[in-house]
Image (tube, rainbow, N blue to C red; front, side):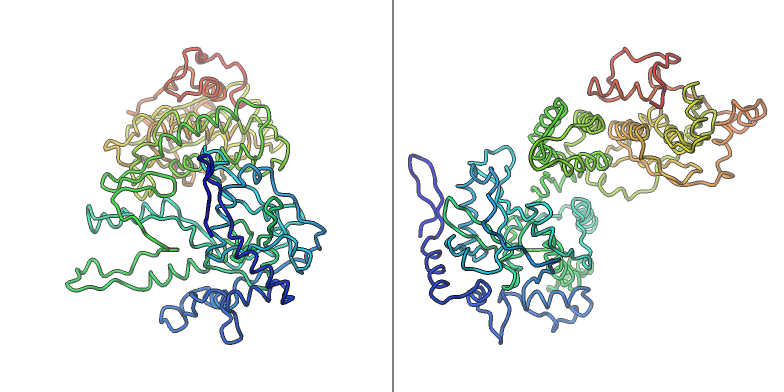
Length: 609
């Protein structure tokens, strides 16, 4: 049966109605229930119960004994994935309606269903069988855009197993917590490229392909396929997903068991060929889901990024940068937004979080807003969310997403510079020993009031950890330009040393400080880590933060840093709250702010506001 017909230059996709009719009539005449038909359809028997005949028990392989999930794999190969349910599903008097997006994308949904029908991923039956089949639970279909293409042209089909809330397939699924699922992403890919380049210079190559075909290899147990059904009334069809579905709560762990098995076997064996050099005798690099590799090139696209292996760089495509900027501006300009719009924004920003690690916490808070948004209606775009969006917009405008050296992803090297810091109830101090420079900041009256309130009540808004974070921010503002890596092929590693161990990131002012610090890192090409140093080993910074307490402490600090140079906070940068307000208002980096920033001493609102 044809896959499509063209009328008036418009392509309309078609289901295989012949297969649908044959299967539906057979079920009616034989009086079969869904599990019985599915077993017959797959060729399952007492002698061979495997739903997918291509999957085998691998116990004959020597390396298999060491695979952590070998028993789980054997069960999947023999019987398919067997879900555990919290309770028996309630009988549905009628199937839930599909999402509105399914109507707009109906032609594309038919295209995807036909592809699954041809590969036996989807079982498509007459819709009236829904009344005769037992144990069938339907979830709505929907569609989401692929990039900026209209839903009528291309889309991703969504089987919404999380609807309705509280009574959905996902809500009724007992989570599989026994399998540790983790994704290494770009960092693992970069490390492998650099490792190969070190041993075989200029010979690194990339193999890429879509893993879509993987999703038809792991099948659901015939006893449970009915829980992954849906209807399309416009077509008069009942759709049953026979494979472990994308979007189901436990599909990641099920596919991880299979993918990790492949990875384990690869990493346990080595290539062999005549005249093989010694440096090529190591085991294979572990891979997951090596389905069809159609491109083996020195350049390529993977994870939504553009890779140039000879140059050792990766870039975020320009069109994705522009799309992200447009979506940020649109969302920030609104009082409310929708879950769909936030999900589109996150789709654009995930590449930013991949390329710039500093962006990850800000990305995660926008993701939290998207999760909290209702399915229907809108959600208020909070000032905190707008601050995060503004920060990411500033980062995009700095423009360090083109030709990023791969070495920046790994951050393997030891610290290039060490900064020692301390804060007291009177002020703070930071030392740059490599340059024999230091900076000191005496707290304003407003800040001293906040400190007294903190000491009296235990309030954390301006606690010692926040004050030491201020030291790191001021150090980055003052010395950031000096930390830029000379070769430009790696981020400079700056280590901050202080004598407090607690992180400070959960109050609004600490978040503001992290935004300013993050801008400095991206703008000047460095990244920072922090370590604890005992107070007795932090003598100079400790004395420098207390020089205002007594003349003796001032003399002590002067003696300890004799020959060092005191550097000043740049004009207008002392009040960090106002500094961020200027960044927010002008959407610019710290080096390009307007001249209306207040001069030192013109405190305006309290610095820790």
